[in-house]
Amino acid sequence: MSKLEVLTPQNSQLIFIDQQPQMAFGVQSIDRQTLKNNVVGLAKAAKIFNIPTTITSVETDSFSGNTYPELLGVFPENDILERTSMNSWDDQNVRDALAKGAADGRKKIVVSGLWTEVCNTTFALSCLNDTDYEIYMVADASGGTSLDAHKYAMDRMVQAGVIPVTWQQVLLEWQRDWARKETYDAVTGLVKEHSGAYGMGIDYAVTHVHGGAERVSHGKRIGPNPAK
Image (cartoon, rainbow, N blue to C red; front, side, top):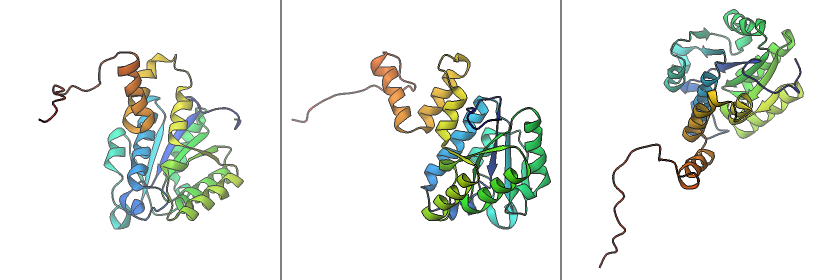
């Protein structure tokens, strides 16, 4: 496996680490609503491309709270792998889940987690130390307790060979070619919902450049009617 090889639906798998409310409360490196948007967008991207996805949580009942319902709603069939260790690599269930995907050639592990400087970093370093997997850290679907905490954790991981990415970058690498019509509608639909200005631009192009219909029905547009 080469780091020069782009992400594909065949060579990738995804893990969400501790996307839980108490962990999010401590995040200061990214707006927390933006963080959740990006996490759920990444999850929906994985669903579109049938990417094997592991969801792991830490101390759910005693401290961290339940994994985001919006994330679990994307994967209602998935088990949630509960841990006590901050380092997911210390849990055998997590190792086994990733090994199952790796046995099918999915050695590129895409990671979204909280916090960057603890759970993400220790997992990434330990996994790289013990395996021949590659780690792709989704920087904008992860968060740290400060800008510095996130930045220096990302720097430390990059020095160790982790590849930094963003959630939309992962989505578009998986799509790769707009001629892949089997996923085209789902990807553009996801972009409209979760990609901000990019999604707004697609809506504008559909309606005002190509003359397509709006994607929602609504009441009549009335006016203008200047006041006298």
